[in-house]
Length: 228
Length: 228
DNA sequence: CAGTGTGAAGTTGTTCACAGCA
DNA sequence: TGCTGTGAACAACTTCACACTG
Figure 1 (cartoon, each protein chain N blue to C red):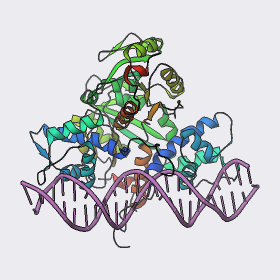
Figure 2: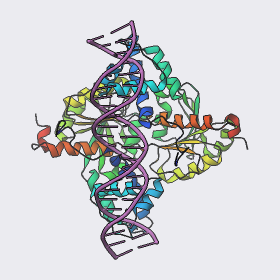
Figure 3: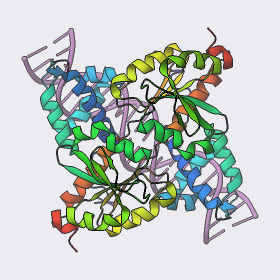
Figure 4: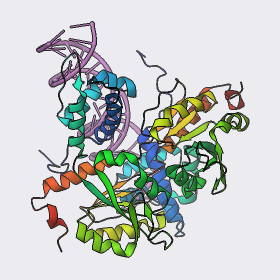
């Protein structure tokens, strides 16, 4: 009780939050095979991770298993989705209806998650007025009134880097509380606004590094690798 | 020397590999302002991180700074890019020329990084034969001969989840050694093949969790948040 | 002083070991 | 025996403290 008494509020480790959706995908795929139970070791095995880690991750959600058999799939799905907030309707605005934005709008997975992009905005007159999978693309100038009227607090930024900060500023001014940013810039926002930066290629450096090792560690490398 | 003697080859922590490209972006943006030096505290400040961490991250690249003034920007950029392997030409094939695939192909940032998608593949006859920013979309059946001829070892998967495993199997059979997978499945590949799974929405759970806290921690919540 | 650079301390997250159970 | 569940040991990463430099 010396310092940082209320610095961290949550307690749920980020790695856990990132692993749970993956489990969820896998568990759902198992469910499709008409299975009813799943065990932590089975999940761990599929992801090449540690069974205890899976057990502990699941424990965060409040789900409890039956010894020897594992977890009831339906209950587990419920528990994870509830815990992650996938059950509440999470409506978002998206700014930047380019390819990445379109990919997100078309992304099937979101609907399993209660996550819905309800309007898209762009400044390109060619895009304004069109519709992408049922979502209208509006001019940015419309964002303000809609955000207020619909009480939307999620904003997604898929604009070019050069515009991202400016859009973020607008979003903040208009009541958006949480920004999911795909532009490769570190947005500066007032305290209290949540920003999640998702750099599309942040794992590129990781994979390049692994490939480098691959070469460095095999004496017979280069062309040889592919030679039949 | 008890066990796992050669389990880990690299030594470069993944968090470091993920932070360095972000620094690189920022440093380049500073360079555009005709600055010549940059300090670790300045970088840390921009990202809200710890100056020592920045210093240590940079130390991995081999760059060295001058006390009191910091690092020479041009040298630092060199050093980071070289270290991350952004200087070597990294050519990749992409399978799945949908929106996400297109977004990647159009993605500006890659060319700063020596990363180039040199051909795209799809099974959709409507897409085959088209060209996206100068990159031809070919039928999947062409992948084999091209991979062999061009010695491409990187594969990017941006297909729907249902096809991803099958494509991965093909890639492996055709000499691809490293797969950057955007489909929401955990690919199963033979040992020795590098897989980097990038779940587009893995940070979604993180942001939803933060928003949940936001609500849980403000007694006057709901509608009030936006009320003028 | 204001910065780099580094060893030591602290924190967080992962893995191990094992108790309990059907 | 094969699983859940948990406390303890361990490893990885981050932050602190401080020596050093111009």
